[in-house]
Length: 132
Length: 391
Image: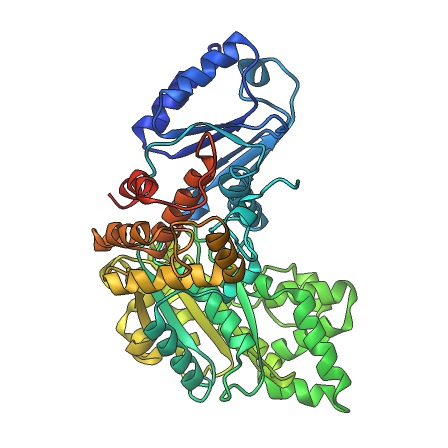
């Protein structure tokens, strides 16, 4: 994501600065740049990393207090520079209003509970800070 | 051999994890852990409310995580599943999270309430009333003295485009002059003030009662009212609530939830004396944090009692000679005491949300343990997780 407006390092810094507990579930890295990305995120104590080899979903969920400020993005794009800059991708942004609210609740529950404890989801690096 | 799931590993009865969320899993509404006195108090007040003023009018406030949403959902479930003897009809509960923008006025509140109630529901009630009487017009006239509202009800029952516009009119939306003419109403609902909107809402409550239902709205996140910056807009919310709180409304119940660590943080339009004196101060209820060790203990025991399949847990404890007890499983007795201690260290953080989250995260840590998953949550795990949530 080096060519992007915000790099992965920027994202990690924001997570750290704003103390945002973050759950990151992905496949095991195969390429060196993926390894690099995982190492970068692993250094952040606010991030939990899990690997699931069956995972194909690209979902990004941000939940907030108040809940009405939550949002989610899902679609075809990975969290990569190519997805953001050059690939032809589709995505849908959900805001926590009306029906969007229920979908975000469901996605949040799935990502923070069910996905994390699937037998095939393996913990790579635990989170060390959980804000109340 | 089948792969263990998180649910089977911890002998959970009907839950995939230890998380409780009635918005995602509607069955979770039946759960309410600990807080026995509060639960009794709410039940008594609801029971009394169905006698006078005939519907509940209550407000709950507390810090984030204090259990407002769970309280609202549980109240609604309890009201329906264990209908108080004082409640004549069957409660018809409607949940909604109120959305408020800086310029939102009571029109928006009325719109959100009616849309959450749903056009199809009201149409069904009108159809039911139509089928039960020889003189429908006369029955509609009993619901409201307002000729325009009577006409909108009649048009709504009829179906088709007119019905749709009649519903839009009842929700307070603006209609073109031609549309108003087609549904035969003389003006837009609410154009002369908030009283118009409340009259329509009360008529909907009367309609519900005419088909043996009691209409009760459960509205969460009312703290959003603090966002309303324009004086007139804020006043319109206040007027709407004041009229709903008044004794003249005996057919539309409401239970409001809002975030406020203390009553001073509450949106003023909700807690002015003319509102609280109408609903009675006993119906403005603070959801305190659990704070005291006995409260925390009974909360966790109650939670584990509801979530864990005790027969399976008992067999597992015996078969694998686990260092746990039936009342504390999946915690060891010592870890159970420790989590209670952590939860009581800072009363402000001793919330149901934090406790449930700690239990869930402890269980996930035991599940993640390598080289083998842990069957029980021990002191080490609690010491690892609890301080970062309660610390």
